[in-house]
Image (cartoon, rainbow, N blue to C red; front, top):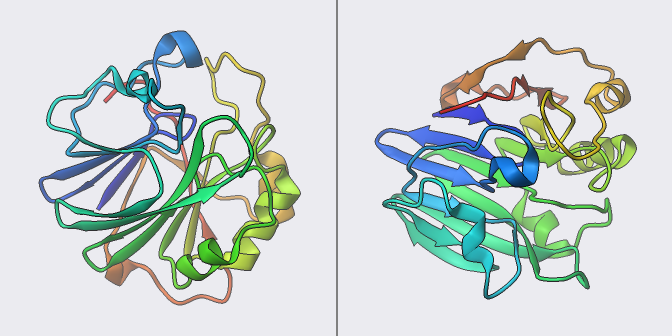
Length: 213
């Protein structure tokens, strides 16, 4: 599996000949280079019906769109969407993705450390978790609490400040300080189940936001 980050909550996750895209954006809304790549499956963590289609104007070819809570099975992966951030406009969803022998958790735009029991149970034994850090999402302390509470084997921060991002955002330093770690940044993560070891503490992987696919 190869994981590439494009900023905000957008990842390209490839396994074999299947590509998963999460939370695409366009340059006009984010200030970052639009991530142009085709995907077999696209996940949206926030959707305001019925106009959620605007989230994926780029790279829509050959994609199956998942934008709400529920159970889905496609392209060799099982996806479970769980509603979060109740009470806001639209639908906010976190996703649990079982893909081959790996279990991934994409926490979407979670903004509270008080998660519901369904999400807590679904996140048990997670291999890789994508965690939003910084306001308006989880502040550094809450993000660290989530990581410690859910104990994924690997956590990958997202939604923090990167060069070119148009909205005001915090960098990753406060989150890393909360967890007392200083990982080196890397362009992408290439990993197999056998590479993930059982450690007492979660490994933090810090990715560089890529400018293009």
